[in-house]
Each structure stands twice: as C-alpha cells, then as structure tokens.
Length: 410
Image (cartoon, rainbow, N blue to C red; front, side, top):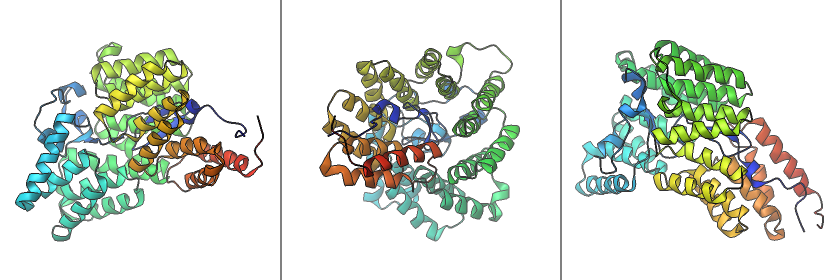
C-alpha cells in the first residue's frame, strides 16, 4: 500500500531558509540566516566594523578562548567548534563545582552556545529573581525565547525592559540589539508589518547593520515579495561596501547567503550555488549556507556532495535541526528510512517547532499502516506551530485529507 500523491522528500524543504530562528521559504532546504538557527548567538559586529565585513570579528581558530563565544555581542556568532564546546562544558562544570554565583551569566551563555536552551532559561530566570532589571540577563533570556519560538513572551520581556529606567542609558549597540530582537519577535508572532517597520527604522539608524537587512529581506521573501527582498539585499550590499565595487567573493557571507536564497526563489540554481559557495568560502563554519548548498546538490541528485555539506554543517553545529532534516532527506533518498527517521526525530527534539521536520517524518510514517495515526498527529501539530506559513499549513491539510481517505494499492 502506498500513500497517494506522495511528494518528493526534497520538496519537503523550503526553497529558502533565512534563519530567524527558522524562517522557511519554498521548496528545498534553504536557510537564510537572521538569528542563530542552530545554536548561534546574536552578533552586532556590523555595527562596530567600518566596512561591515564579518571577517573582521569572526571566529577562526578552533582553540580560541571561550569568552569569544560567551560574550553577549553577536547576532550571528558562529557555533563553537568541538574544542570550544569542550572548553564551554568545562567552564560550566567548574563554575557549578565552585559555586561561583558571579559566573552564572557566563554559565547561562555557555549553555545557550551549546544549544541547552531549557537549562539556560532556568538559570537566567533564577538570576532575574534577585536582579530583575539587569539588561544583559534579560537580553539573554529574550534570545532563548526567540530560539524556542516563544515570541509573545519575548515581546513581553522586551516591553518590560523599555519601562526600566536603565533603558535610556543603554549604548547604541545594545539598543540596536533590542530593536532587532523586537522585530524578530513581532514577525515571528505574525505582526509582520510592525516588525518590518522596526527593521526599517533600525537600518536608517545603523546603515551597515547586516542582520537587519537579512531579517527584513527574509520577511518579504516569506510573504512572496521577492523583488522587494532583492532590493533590500542589494541595499545592504551598497551600504556595506563603502561605495566600492566588490567582487562576489568579498560580499558579507550573510548577504551572500541571502542572495542565494533569492536566486533560488527566481529558479536560478546556478547563481544560487555560486552565492552559497561564496558564503562558505568567506565563512567555512556558516551552517545555513552549507545546508542550502546541500539542498541544491540533492535536487541535482548529488547525494554524496549533499552529505558532505550536511555532515560538515553538523560537525560545526550538532544542534542544528536543519542539518538533521537535511540528513534525513538524504537517508530517505538512499532508501534508508530508519536512519531518516532518526534524523527527523532528532530535529524535532532539538526544535519542537520545526514544521519541516514534522512534515518529513509524517510523510515517512504515511506508508506504514502501524504509524498512520502518528502521521496524522504530526500533520495536525503543524497547524498549531507558531509562525508557520500558510503554504506549509495548506500542504499539511492536503496530506491530512489524503491520510483520511482510503489508501490505494500501487
């Protein structure tokens, strides 16, 4: 027995991820980075650098001090390497062993960098009990809320911060973070126009702040306004180039990834591949760009190449739900459904709101009579995930109607 109207697993990805924590666009596994997808932290390097070049502040050595990962200073800090993860874990253990309360914020940041969001949230809330207006603790908690897609609570925290007396004295970079997070939370909750307005104001104030361009373009892409998204991306290029002509290899990797997503929306896979490769060349640990490149390779039946990109991405970010969904699709295309299931379930474990992970797992279950009820449950759950686009909901509804009808023998 086979599930009617089965869709290729490749098309169960969105053809444009702009990482917000998870903004998904049309029909391949493509991620456009707007806040850390995986276990990234927020990065304001574009505010402080003269040329908007992320390479000025990006992490290069695998043995660098963990403070570079821990410090609340990044909208797109790269995920810690294996060496750094070990240092972070050791730091957590030493702080807890020594009962060093002054290191609690560092511990919480380490937990965030490692992708341990529930533990980080518990620790941050405990700290706020004795220091309820501390802006650093509050912003870390907002970041956790965004990563867990609890947009309403993130907005409440941010609004509460604004009423604190200390808010007026925040440095410009801190206020930029605040506005950026507010925009992400508004868009995630469904208030797209308000979020776009906040991002537009932020860009006017901080014209080289790359994450704002990426987030704004991503929001337009999600609403189908591809030309507007492209205009925003090119505006970002103009503002970060200081009026100089830049080769593709010199473009900020976040903008390169965004332009690759836009090229995919325009069905220009060759240009998209070049943009993604350019992003990876500038930032080898750029997980989203590797996941996006893997999607194109899968479309071209280059499963070996896709697997290399996805494994490299997961080596850099073991907590990347997108990476696991990609590996699940590769395994399924190789006729290894059990391995595919493991990856899809791991993705859901890492990101309970990952609609594509649930969708893929539901399709995997659909051909198994003993798992048919689970398939229906997963499709129904997609309807209640915050921030899921209407096309994803419609697709889930289509499959729900198929699952509810009698199966046909092939």
